[in-house]
Length: 628
Image 1 (cartoon, one colour):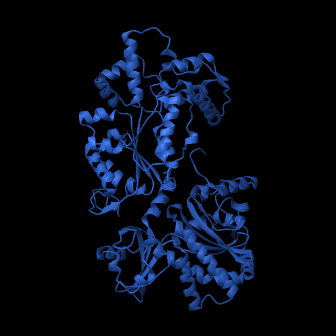
Image 2 (cartoon, rainbow, N blue to C red):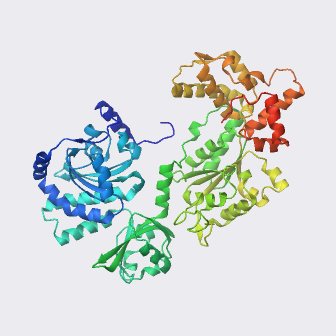
């Protein structure tokens, strides 16, 4: 699937599922064991079941109320025990996700239980990674349980895919390790000391920091991970009031909205991580609050997960940028120089010349390549929303604001690159805010008053003449000089016609694959007409033309396969046309450069929309293929 990243072990499992003739549209799992068979198997697996009961109960208690189900399976994928909230258990039973069902890969295709057995390692399967359609609404985390180097069972936690969290698998692995230790020690799981060891192991092996306080909000216990999250030593926390780390108001809000399934972003007064995501669980004994447990994770880790799931990544590299034109190759060399620098980059060029591809290649060859790549089209975001889009907002900042607030694109890009496309269309007030970010390296969320440091590289792009925009007052002069450090002028396609055949060959192969065609090439007549065209829409227009031609051609792309504007309007070696021809060409070029936006095109041409519509009908432009 172009543009999608699927782990190889998932692809391998899909292929095995097909070979095993698993029905991807089965409505539920398969029950193979009756009550007598289940009883017999549970007797045979008495040691592992006995060792897992307390661990599973403790693990479930830790996530109780958050929509998870905890399961124990044997080494063949048969489910031996399930515990969970009523609602999620009902959903599981509808799929035969219950005792006696077999959830091996051979039985139900790709799933976490079957894959943990097949690969003999912990695994998390998320949503569409499942092979069967009816199981794609789940996320499952499984870890094999070993005894004498052999798999004797699998521990699994499952929930709706919206509950996916990177620490879930860590909890399952820690609990599976605890079960293995209990089997070896052959001690009762009801022993209080063993239960305490299990909880300590879970606390020590999950990725988040944990702080436990008494009923007076004094810190009584932390795990080893707290240093990695806050960079504060354990001994510097024990016995101290929690108010030394978190404002009293934030503590009260956390405890009043106590829910282990909901994170709240909190500002910490100490430690290197100012913003962290916190959730908590109050400890109640006989209706009396005796303490609170706080789970703390770095906000950036959650943002990185969001970036990964939502596709905020750069895919293009310099190897993907095609061309042999001398002027173009000089542009590529300049981009490679920019990649090794930390300075701001400004890409200037017409629409369709590949500005975002260059931006991604620069990011992927910089020291920020492992960080996020966030692209924002400044011209496409409504004026009243661009501030919250870039800088985020706090809770209650405006009507309709999300509970707990929302980070902006600058925060999501922490440690990486933000690509500000069409920066020339940014409103003046936002230009002032962007200039402040460039100077102070901090942002302030809408409705907030706390400055948030951001480590982000800016790559800006525009198809406008920013010097003229500065002269006209529509673009700030100081911002222009801040952005205009490493300037890269993109080469339009009409100035690199010697690269035309490279692109034609590339796009023919691409759309042959996508459309199931076998176009062998392009005729000399069609190629000549391509060379005569002035390509106002640049590579986007060329790709659109090739896609159309591949669709309608049989063996070779010929003149009758080309869009009408290319056929009728060769630029080179033609006689000077009439004024009508000139006007038609001007309108067509303006439409393409403005992505066929009537309002922007009319403004660019200095005419009214009604006049523009009339001329489009007069010159029969409306029937043309609209390029990307």
